[in-house]
Image 1 (cartoon, rainbow, N blue to C red):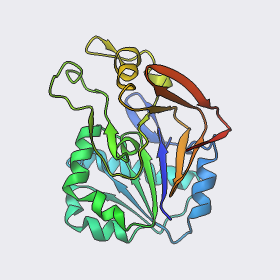
Image 2: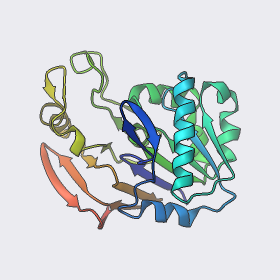
Image 3: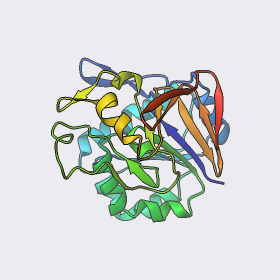
Image 4: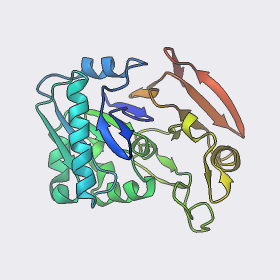
Length: 247
């Protein structure tokens, strides 16, 4: 049975003066407790980079995440960062892991990297735990929703907001919702001018950090605060410390 977690953020680090530092992971909605119940001290974890060529950044992400898991009471036998340096062995690395984390980053860049290593096909027979973080969660969808993020993308007529993902779910999430309520890009308001209009194409589920969606095969459960954005309307469908089933 596939176990997939779509998170807004793992909460593994805090940014201070532009630098990331490890911290105890968020457990507001029992995310840590649930993960711990699925793992053993012999479990192997693979972090799949969002930008495979940024080796220095990837090393920092690996170190910070590893320290955060230690601080949060996890004991892994091995933690590996998968990027361009070991891409030729992607299938073997993933297949021999018990859990993978799809890291956050730039959604289109990560999507192209996933295609390069044939991640969709590798995960077809993967029976470990899959955890998406931010962009990683967004790329889990069958058809990924990708709002513009970088300067120039909102005014670029060739920028694609919808493209094929890993086909692990039909759910499109929008992470860091509360942080982006007043966000603007290229003169457009992220929520009001972009996401609300795009919600006429497909429902979008907005998550705040600390909330997540748990998918066990066909059983889909929201844990924590979540907003459904559909046909231009925003509806609060779950609160923190509560769960709600999605059909």
